[in-house]
Image: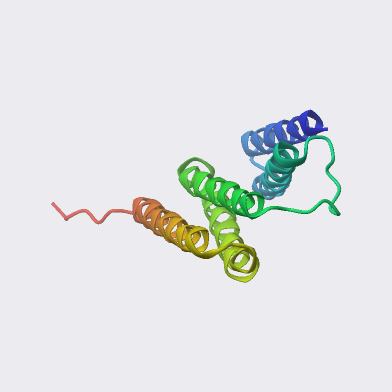
Length: 153
């Protein structure tokens, strides 16, 4: 099943590249967003499979480590998307920032309920570091996208 999702991600990325080459920017963005969404689902299923094997039912209980792992994986994907914004443009930047925002909300509203003392504090510290890294990367990309002012000769 996970391999099937991987194929879907690869095909979506290929369609996005082909549409970009053909000059169809909107179509490329739609395919890229689809590939990103399926990649996040694939990563989530991989985490679920790592903790539960082939039993991927939602009814199976989740541990503290599992909920933290989802957050860590989603934050890593968000940072990767922000890092790829130089290649993929604003779509990757926005998708990465959106995923980081979603992950932050999940940590505050879901993970803090399930995590205990030290793990909760570590989770907040790790999230803070990820958010700072994401903000610095997004700032660097935004500054690089601005046209530079040149002095008149």
